[in-house]
Length: 588
Image (cartoon, rainbow, N blue to C red; front, side):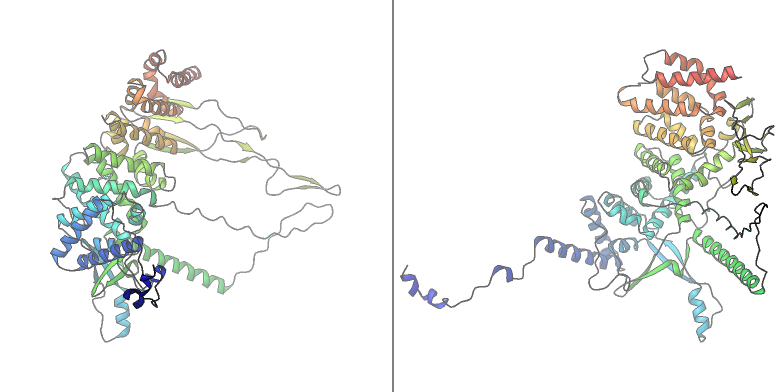
């Protein structure tokens, strides 16, 4: 030990100050991985935004490999020192879409003068941007495959749903291909332009050489991100007029009267009202113009955003109009349910439709654009005044069952009972004075409902065989060999039957529906098919509660009675249906 004191190395380093480990610049594994990912994505963004085909192909192959390995995250940003609101920097998803999507500026002002500043401003304001898709099917196939593989990795689904450019590109690719596929089919759906097509098929570029798997991938993508999308919403209800201020004046031994003194009209108020009306009219015209341009994939300057990366500059969408998203998404879903034959393709399509049906915030768009044209051509509403009443009491009288009359071609049925009538009288005693409200006279009756709605039902065979639609295709899928497709089809019909009375009537009157439900009810009611049999019984029970459907269900009374006598686990539900039939026969 003493020899070490005189060792030359010990003498040399005896006064050395050793550095602590914590003071050494050290990168953790997490930080090293983050730096590696950022540098990797930055290089791929450079390649994707370059004009070199070899670099673009290398970047796409690298991203395709990452997506297969479930290691590709779209939410990672490559910005360093700038805020996105001040200096927008393209993400890896924006750069990926730039390979197939571009917005070309178009100047609508042909008579502009470059020497005049005002004309330059007008020229900038009238500049529009038109969507252009790359016709290279190999690039489209690779990019759609990358998006489909990466959608299973969180939070890529939410990030993709919030990217308007990606949504528009996917919708256009699927809509173009399915429009081409539908044109080859002899069976037309409810979006036939010769009938009541709410969609515009202008400016479509059919992609004939695409593989059908690409469209299936797009449907699978929307089946995963549909929960983050908001479709067209119902218009806000009209605001009720504000009540005018009332000044009651009380006199001795006199009834209270409501005195309203409207202000005298002035010229200023009239001018303000006229100006506001003109402004609203101009705004509506501008909105209609922008909407018509958006349907042709032409967007205004306020709807796009410029992205810069080095010397490269391109445009992306700020926000996709809800009407465009709703119409094209529902259009490709209905076309795909007819065009697709593969089980996986049909399953992805039916899953998306089922989620839209269950979503309360998106059900309005489905009812208004898809279901309403279907039942409007089958059911005609007839509004009639209520029957006269002989008493002025407030007791409501209702019929136990609505009356039904049917014929071979059409049926007129009065379903709702008589409206409830009430009389309101307010009596207050104060200083031996009786005060009666003047708004509701005590000697007359106030009707809460002034119209009774009846339906005229057309012959279902003449209507549905001529124009097949979404419901008819879902009814056909009840006989599909794939169990999941059968179950989702029953769920769609059950959800639709809960939404409105007209849909319950329309669904039940489809040829073959009741026979399909009875087959599912009796075929293997236990084991793997127990859930399908249970949902078929519940749907049949819900349809039997509607009096308009009883003429369609009564011919199957004997078959249902035979099923109820067996050891079917749903015999109780079938027995309740038979009881409704018996009550109907006794009532008639």
